[in-house]
Image (cartoon, rainbow, N blue to C red; front, side):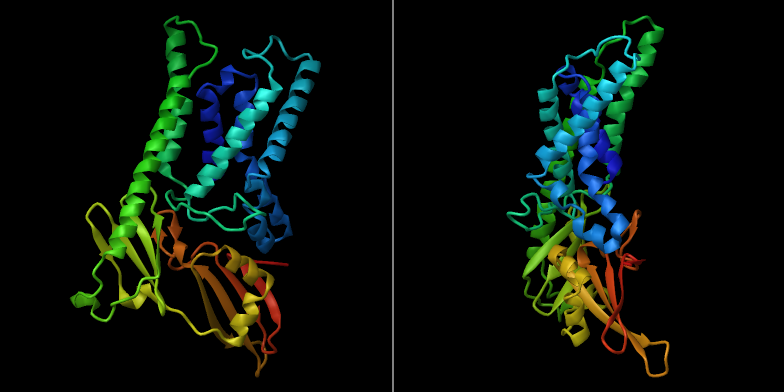
Length: 360
């Protein structure tokens, strides 16, 4: 998920009751809920480096204890500076319990892994013991409904607190517990609904009759099926069908029980590997990409080079799970998380790119 949803999730979890048990719980859990994404600092090493290390050890069960210790350490240093500076006018409303705060940070960190597992990008929680990528593919990378639920849970108590203060109601030390619990229940219910519709989408494809009048030549052997979510609409799913000869894209509406696909634009035949494609797969980008991608589409194009007898060969890596259009993503024309390896006429790598950004 994107960072703001992670941060709000940590804050909402704290307000559900953890902030009553230990001082600084809201601050620590908010920071911990986003802490695993510090691996994006690898971007200073280039786009391929950050692609390789994003959702790496910071998104694993083995990494969580260390991350929790770092977050608690940062909060402890801030607490020590604050108390020594003389700015502390009164003690915190909750008791100082650093061990308990560490446990709460573990819970917030687990929420990050859970949210990232929910989308199609996935994560490797058991790395390095198990390098397999896991992805539930239930929630879009930014879900406006979840975002709104969490935002309301955080903002509503402040708004109602202002109203109560005007009518003379005594200010509560811990506000918003009911809103936070309601938000957690609502988000969980939304996940459950999406899980049901995800299975319905897969089931619809697996039992769909592809031998109708419009698809007479498409009596395909289905090896596996992937369903990726659209934002907001939990009944609409982007489908990837893996067959022995090709990948087929489709859109499923589980509410109406319909499947839409177009043979000319939604069929991608699996190409035979050329020498340049094989070399590209052995590059840094190729190895990282194929390790991560569930439905890689590797293609090759050749264009004229700078010299009269020169040519440039571009091997492109795309993941079919992200090749669909939404109001937030132009996946057909410019699929996110796409890479390219460029060779000169001598077969040497002259450039590697990730999402159009050159690796230097």
